[in-house]
Image (cartoon, rainbow, N blue to C red; front, side):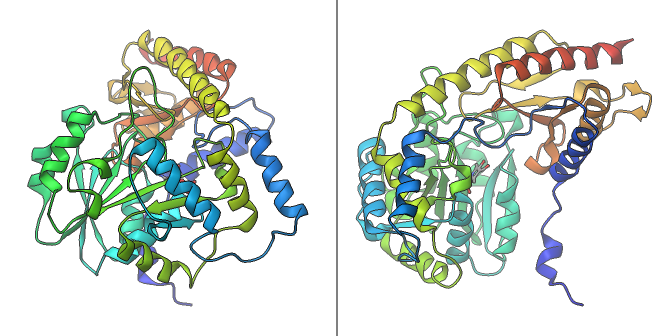
Length: 395
Ligand SMILES: Cc1ncc(COP(=O)(O)O)c(C=O)c1O
């Protein structure tokens, strides 16, 4: 039976292969050091869970408006005003089934076949795939030589008459870099007034370290009318399974997105009530989780600094450490020579039972991604395992 060409254009995930190996080891009773988590390991704060339970008890278990319940859209308006100094009306907000669908729905609403979307690499794995699923062409801009941030010049150089969007992510998964206000201003100067949408994925906004500040690029002069802010409750409130995200932008794009969304999904009613409490209730668990992530970042960074042959991007936000493993290429182990980061991942799983995500899917094949959304004890074990793994290659 036929499978559509569209499917062929979407790459199979290498992450899955690594995860399957880890699962197999676990099944055999092996204690796996899992550094693949893409979500907070903390439970959803109890007052948010209570709101979900109350919604069920109250029978709030039916379809809602496809763009989301009015109270939640208003709470998002208030949040964007209070925290991001961005002023919207409720009709400029669409609630989605997580941030991931918000991005593809925006792409469907923007792109005609063959339209180009500029994506700085390393990028979150789903970006290029989603662009392809929307019949667009991902235009990847390598940022490894510019501190893992796209420069205004590189952005300018990749703009063509077919460029319809710029997919931007700060704090960034997988590198953890955070763009400074000056850097945002410089990008804004390139984009301002052009017929190019900016999709600003701000899902890691609250997981930010030291004295970094998150600013939305939508707030830079002239960009409000061409920016779609993507955010949600998944990461900040440890609510990945509740599936609530949102997009904010000019009325015409949000209405276009809702026209599409209304024919394929509705955000879950119970989760919307919980997200409402997340955004309007006690914010102290968010700060507590941020603090714990920062502590874990410090543990992992301090440990990795002592391992020769590995270098990494210093994470200013999110919960990942992106490690350059090319210093290990050419070394031998009993299954052959390490040539790629996938080989390094295989080597780490098989010799240390440590699972990391290979960088190829993020557009950085010489890297692996280590998540520090896991306990301090696991991170300590991981450091020992990485040290042993590198030492064994030197013998
Ligand atoms: C950069 C980025 N954007 C969006 C998402 C998806 O968020 P959600 O779970 O709300 O769909 C993720 C999840 O890993 C992410 O890393």
